[in-house]
Image 1 (cartoon, rainbow, N blue to C red):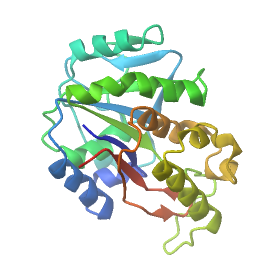
Image 2: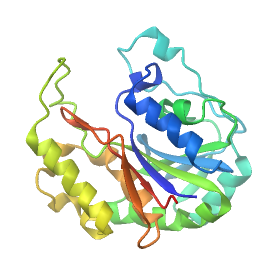
Image 3: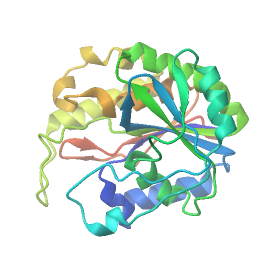
Image 4: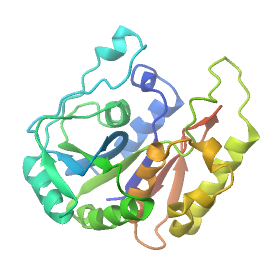
Length: 254
């Protein structure tokens, strides 16, 4: 299976028919059908690494101030408790199975609703340990790499640029040049296979404007860790809107 980093943007994408949801739907139609899906989302940070191990996932509405229709969305695919236990063993001593504290948050379901609307593929979510540094997040991605050969689609869901403090919601708002430049700088390093420069993201110009906190960038490190050298990279949904990047990267697809 290829690996995918997706810029998920606003949870409102779950209700809309737009260029992003159409691209995600096209991905679901184009990719080989996964045996299972493992999502690393910006929106599940914990102490320790947890893997959802319920037999069926529940929908986490981890936001406020949105229309009721968004809270009514349900995405409840089956889980895979056996796979969850396998992943916990692969990531020992980092990880343990999580039976009931979480499910799928909007970083997962707002994208999967378009990719796999039938909700019939076993889906798990992996948390990010807030105590770990960038190199550790990357190493966990490396440890997950064998799952690809088992038909598991690994998805990192975040945003390369994510600064809601500077985000301008007004129609026609101008995207600042620094945001475009940062997004292009990261894309160039992904394409070049320069993973270390992205692990060392603190040294990148404008990084503190690009994301004041790194939780939306860290899912990319898992995807980079899970790739093989010289795999092809394809950029999708490649927009920067004000101070949020919607850029996605599909790695290893034929």
